[in-house]
Length: 207
Image (cartoon, rainbow, N blue to C red; front, side, top):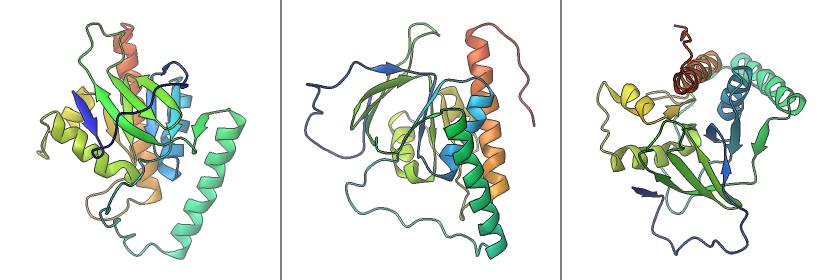
């Protein structure tokens, strides 16, 4: 099952390095991407963060900020600096110059096999889970449509069963800073539980 952002010529493969494997790929290297990357690192989950998908045509309007106050904006900026410092200190694998081009999904024959492959501008990545942030929202919709997932009340459960997660997106407005951090924590806990399940280890997911 192949998921494409838009029709394009075949991806070049000559000269590209072999596929890299990791546990989780985070698409979007902004505030939400750094927040979930930091949480995954605290959970001991191998993660690669790449930039959002390149725009190949007219994009959907970005969600409004919901009239975010100057104090809230200042708080987010301060936390962003802390996240950037954490990423540097812990040498997180952040690749803002790498953009995803195409996703490929297959049902693994064994739990240890990676179900997601992401072709990027610098090579190929494979992972068990993919976290989408606001900048990759349009691509997520295409992925969900391609695997027959609709926007029902079971959306979150269906996404998680495929190893897909969403951080930094609200229904109509951009979530608050604390909502994004909570989403990142929940995603990190769920991904950690999936890793533990593959290794037959029991962990609790916080509320």
